Every structure is written in structure tokens, then in C-alpha cells.
Length: 118
Image (cartoon, rainbow, N blue to C red):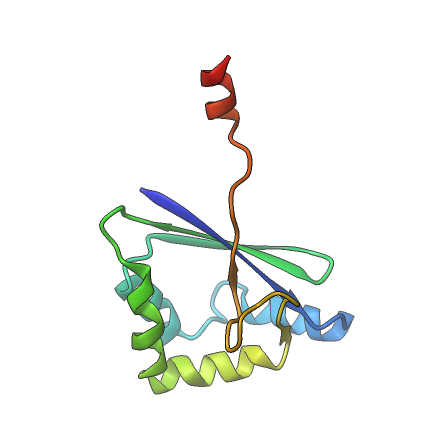
């Protein structure tokens, strides 16, 4: 099982942040989006917020190729509608590539690995 980590900023506006959080409460994410996430092989996904910065943790089996998801999502009208809605609240990280929303994060520390190295 692999865990992938991503970051993205929200617009620094308290009302917009509150609305973004409401959209992500149980029962508010469109069922088609939940189905799309599951169909892509994602077993679990969590989003955390501090200030206006978001961190997403995605858990997928080792055999799942997540690079294909972008193409599938681009071809799905409901996913594109959801992305357009969420885009109202989001802003790109300064170092994001053109067209990139969620930026992959790089792990720099592991307690398990540090303990093994002792």
C-alpha cells in the first residue's frame, strides 16, 4: 500500500474557506465524485487544513498507477464540473506547474527509518 501526499492553497478568505469545508462534509461531496475516486483505485483519501493550506493524503494499492487518473478525470463532465466549483476556492501554490492544482509532496523524514538506522 502506498500513501501519496499533496498540497494546495485555498484563497485566503474565511467565508470561502468555510464554504469549501462545507462542500467536503459527509453527504455534500457529489456521489459521482466519490464513485470516481473509488474507481481510480483510491482506497482512502483525507484532506487536512491549516490556515489556507490544504494537505491531502491518498492511499492506493501498490499496483495502482495514479498517473492515468488525470486523463480519466479530464474526460468526465461531472468531475470537470466539480473541479470548476472547487476552483472558485482554490489558488495554486507558487511553485505549481502550469495547470497543476494539487502539488505532490516529498517525504523528508520517517521515524521508522530513523529508528532502523540507529
